[in-house]
Image (cartoon, rainbow, N blue to C red; front, side):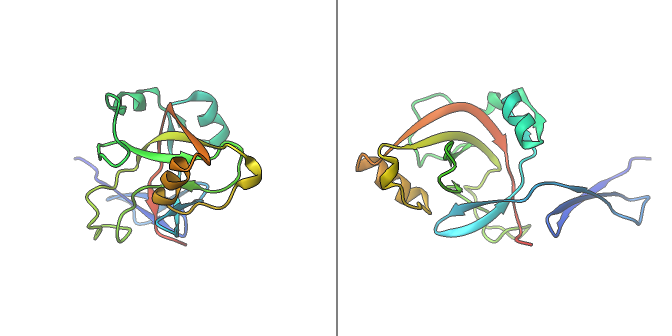
Amino acid sequence: MKKRLMAGLVAGSLWLTGCASTAPMTVSLPLQQAWFNDQIVHYVTTDVSDQDMAKAMGANYAPRLRDAIPNYPKPPRQKTVIERVYGFPNGEQRNIFPSAPTPVGFESTDAAYSPIWLIYQVQWVNPNQAVELTSEGALLDAEAKGLVNIERTNIVVNCPIVPAP
C-alpha cells in the first residue's frame, strides 16, 4: 500500500502528514523576509548549492541545484525555471525577488514564479548613498545610474515564498 504525503505551512512551520496518521508532524524552518514589488514577502530556505552557505543557513546542501543554471548571457526579465534573487552580502537590506506567487498558495496565477533562485550579489558603489530598494525595477534603475554593481554567482537556492504568519 502506498502512503501519500500531504504538506503545508502552518504559522511558518512546515507540516507533513501521511494518510495513516491523523496527527501532523511539524518541523521549524527560519522564516525570512524579502522585497517583491514594494511589498514584504516571506520565504523559507530549504536547499543551497553552496556547502558553506547551506551550513550557515541551516539548509540542505544540494549541489545539483547548479544544474538548473541556464546558458548565459540571459536577459534579466527572461523567465526560466531558475529566477534571479538579489542579495546584499553586506546586509544593507532584505533580498529582492523579481516574482512571487499571486496569491500565495494553490490559487496562484503567476506563471513566472519559481522557488529556485540564482543569487546575484548587489554592492553599492558608494555605501554612503545606499537606500532601501524594494523592487527589481528600482534595483535595475540604480544599476543603470551606476549606483550599484550586480554580480552573478553560481549559487542556487530553493526558497519557496510562503503565506505570511
